[in-house]
Image (tube, one colour):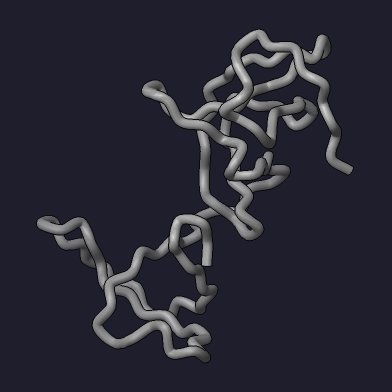
Length: 132
């Protein structure tokens, strides 16, 4: 179970309704998935994330590294002088291993803060520890 109390299952979608309810914004679908512990029961409502495209050379970051403020999602990016800069980014789908796709705002070779987000501030100089 995740830190937010959610649990994920992978399944195979075998029916997707062509209609969306205009009053609730929902649609019916049917999927086959493993449920060995019987956690999922008939009649439960669930949230479903459906992949809708393949992302080539996607930038993935730890979801816990992403902060949220009034302007949206952000990362603390570390420059060549080891100074921290807050940068707003656009995020995509949450993937396996609690990795989130960054759709814009970060280049593949840029470094970003992964831990102690509450201790980091704009312009602060840090001593980076690179992940292997």
